[in-house]
Length: 210
Image (cartoon, rainbow, N blue to C red; front, side, top):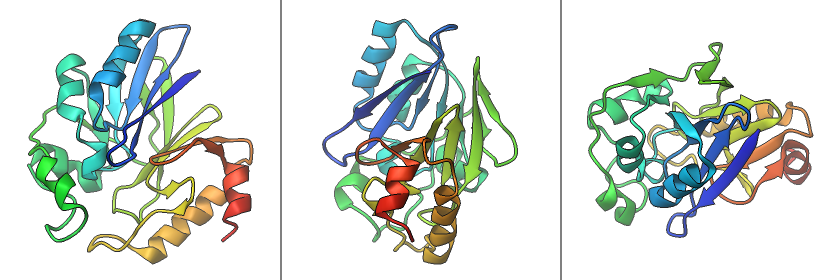
């Protein structure tokens, strides 16, 4: 399986291109603020994008979504708890929460063709399959996406620990329960966070044993 991370330098959010190199099918995980870089990589590699998967609906993970959807008119998938951010023009956070700079940049989204990412139902993007782990805490609909030996963790955790929970819809208790689930995954699992460098579950667990 091919995986490439595309970071951006304003909010330090990672997008990932995940592809089956045999079939050429690909999925984009999260839509940060540099969609042209994502598009360029997909075109250079000749992949066929089958879905755009969102680990959650915070603004820094949505900034490039409209541009990606324009280029790749494919389903977008998110946990049902945050579906309304994509379909009903809502924002995930209250106005006083988070970065004013980011909030000023957020699109108002009213998308059709939005799929659910729900635990217990594997999500297929062409020949790719992702198992969904619902790991709330940072937000109600945070998920991690597990495929082969890779887990795309979004903001469930970052390479430097656990993610922020000080929001009206965050929960430190739920976050700790979610992190405990991640700690139980196989140590060799490659861990692709929403922010920061790629690591493994074992290395992250050794640094943050709980």
